[in-house]
Length: 212
View (cartoon, rainbow, N blue to C red):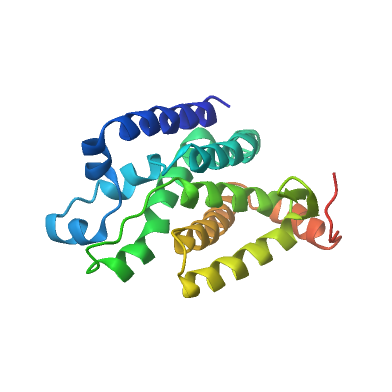
């Protein structure tokens, strides 16, 4: 679980640095208008380690702590590329989840975005592949299955992304989640395709409110 803790530590450290130093924030945040005109493609990565405030940081790191530790153990224990695959998923999800927003806002001078949500969403959906009927508690109270949560999450992100009346990058959440799902399926196909038998069998025994 060293990778997960290292990622959390990096996010926390860079949060405090960027909060204390506005210049670091300005040079690291995802700013499609500047990326296009100055080729500052590093922002696709650096913006994923910035957060708007402590609450934003806390919820992303809280989620990463539980789901990241689990996916780290799975990728290593089931010989799915181990830590290399885990890091590849995390960093590539940061980039992939920002691409739709970049394309949509590359001529919008006022648009900025930041946060690890795209990568964290990818990690959550990677977990759902292996445990579709495990329990997820929404707001710590409402218990539903991971599979149902995934469906509701996608619908919500699509709806809010089109509505676009808040300061949350719902497109990053949506595409990060879908990418995490696709990445994990491809990873299984490449490294341990026998796992599909167990996954399919698990899907045959649904539980609306989850098990465990």
